[in-house]
Image: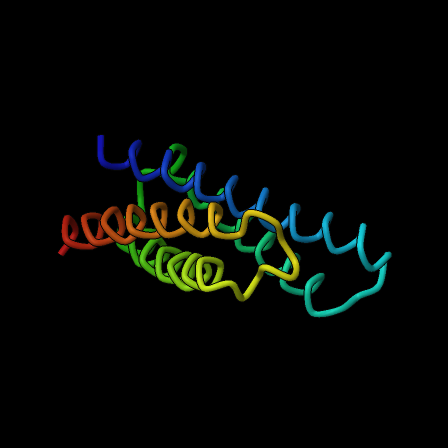
Amino acid sequence: MQREMSGTIGIIGGLVDLLTGASIFYQNSMAMGAMMNGSAILAYAIMGLGVTVFLTGVSLFTSKVMHHFIGLLMLIYGFIMLLLGAGMIAGFFNVMMQWSWLSGIVMITLGLVMLYSGLNMTRKVM
């Protein structure tokens, strides 16, 4: 049950990151053209995080080993999502993205859930 819940959280978190990165990239490309700047690099980084989190969530459904390692990854992903969400709420991404506060709230919520899930996965093995 814990593995399925953590996998679902990872898949949802990955999709949120992918959509957030795509939104930043799309809004940046509409305003600036196809130039590579800080916004585009940030968008690619968030989309890369989204792919990684998504694949980790999928692997929880297919793999029956390495729960401790995946639990540690979930802790790292949750912490990164907390930082990104706090930056969005603080307005660091307002120039690049509309409704960044809403994405920030979603990222913080998923980050907290990922931290909780990762802690439970690492504690279960120890």
